[in-house]
Image (cartoon, rainbow, N blue to C red; front, side, top):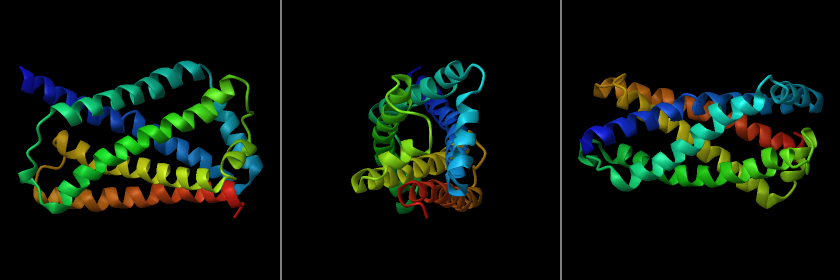
Length: 206
């Protein structure tokens, strides 16, 4: 019974990490990347997302609750589920450890990012415009905090995508898992570039 429960939790955890959280992550990075094309482009894209019908409902049930549940479930899995690490070599065990470390960093980063953007917007403390992130990232400390946070988040998603493919039986053979490693590496590099390039634009306008 306990093994079946743990198996279900692991599958649900990996599913939430890709759908809907992973999809939202990519969408969020792409929308923010409009900043690279100028202040007006970013504000049009951000304004469009902000003015979507039922936005608060969508954010609550498609973004915030899944992220919260994924985080709580992730902590539970780390401390309760037994893993057979002997099945994998040094590289995969290293990725296993980095996944847990990046999960903690990502959780801290997301909590802070939500606080100084979404919550601040809701309280009327800031306006939804280009200057919001521009002002946040003018501090060198915050710039590097965001760089680390974004890279941690993109790594956690990309490496989690590899685990998702294994957990759900899409990559069973060693060859398919090697291919998935290369594919998820490309995903990590691509979305990291989008995120970091956007931060540099906000911070330095280049």
